[in-house]
Image (cartoon, rainbow, N blue to C red; front, top):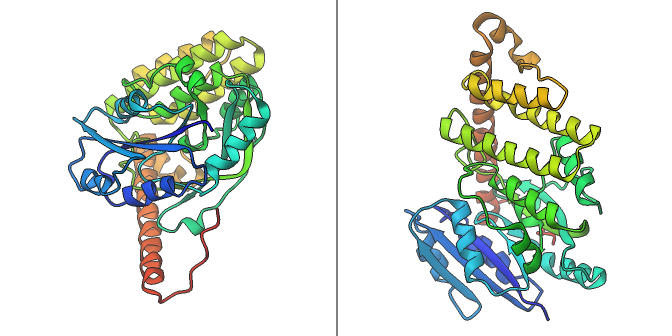
Length: 343
């Protein structure tokens, strides 16, 4: 029976790491190992993780080097025939790996990449919403990647189950990337695969945390530069794969979608993005505020409108997070009826 390595990079995840490890232990696929790499946490992450150490669970620590370095370390230590990446605040349904491994046995290809359903939640996994998108199906790599950019779609990190052969063919995580490192990494994995097999009812629960999470760019110059580097790398991979009209249009759509993260703070990156679009035979439009913030943009400019929108979204997320935390507390105390966590 093939061994599956569940690899968990962790940094200051003390609030969630126990639940994440428990979801890995609960996997119905019996042949598994679990490796947790603590990336120099300053909270209780390491001590909590070490409470789970056993023959099948290994916990190691290293000085803080970033999520990509922690993932590379975990892969160096593992022995699995298949790799399951799992962030330290997310959860797997009990049969996630079991269902995907059954699909692996049917397709009989070490370079077929397995994907699955995912839904987001804050404190209560039973409230996760699983909303199908155009990439929730079996697709060849080019079609999958084009659809992702055309619709600004996302496939969560833990959805994938990757063979060791495919993992080695894709190469290590890029430690230069501070945001969307998973997007760039799995682009290479998909690019090296012979197709994506979508496995229904094989579920991942993606926890929405604060805006300080890795994927949040904000006004950090370092993160903006790393984000743009990752975008250029992915566009290069895509054009090397297929240089068709549709692919070039998808690249331009990708640039347009992310342009608002650089405008107006980094005009140099905006100009470079515009030049990339011109080389692809198209052009980019400077982003505008949505109708909700049009008056602010008219009076004070796009930067003010953008900042107002960011502040509103942070306040909204904070309010939703607070409400969900309170409901979770009452449910834990038995004051409210709970729904069974469906796997």
